[in-house]
Image (tube, rainbow, N blue to C red; front, top):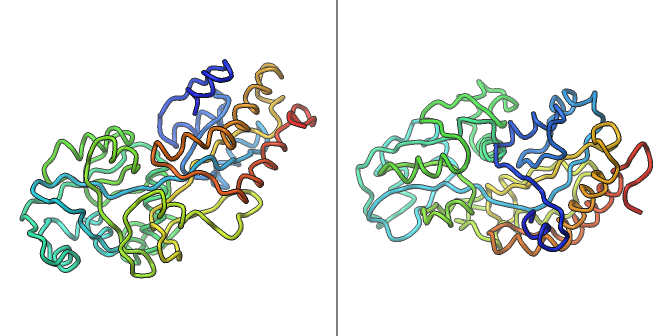
Length: 316
């Protein structure tokens, strides 16, 4: 989006993929003009930024977190259930021919290869989506990782029971590719771009769902969205919805006069965000992301129009 906006509007956006944890911290400390995160701000995130004012969170696109793996000799995607996924990332399923995997994949000749788990080492919105899914779908995950407390078994960082950490989707992708038997959770776009197989996942309806634009849209097409635009898509009840779907939010301060050096710069930022939720949506599908539905665009418009300079809206 930033590249296309620069081409069409002549404004350069310097965007760095540093992980949602670092991005939110930079936004809180006002070292960036805006952040982008696959996890909406927690109450504590907002409290830490309160000196700079209230936030505006603008959903921009939908994505999917996939269970990607590197296993030679398989021609079709593996099928996984919530219990299998939790078992792998809890370290309870340690070989690819485990009985649970065999039962979910009848007729597949699974190797005895050891499972090598790779997870994020940095604070990550991808981790937030994935651990929120595990928290919603697996009581064993909550019991083990959260010690029974679901607020502690999900977030941008958790204490992993097993596996090696790597920084960014890029690092996890390379960790999976570099190990026969490797498995990790990454953004679907990284899996597709790096030609790494990923699993179909059984959803709450009992259907085995391939991550795709259609199944992401099914999960993301909510009847309504909350006024503050903070919502979760994991473990969807939609029969054809992919259960590990998520949202990317652009995060800015509501009163930009408190944090930006000039109103012209604030005008440019708001114009970019407005462009992103409209013309910029054309960039979503080619990159394996889901575009915003009309009812969410309407709410986004209201959010962007609330951004102001000392109380005066920056958009009419």
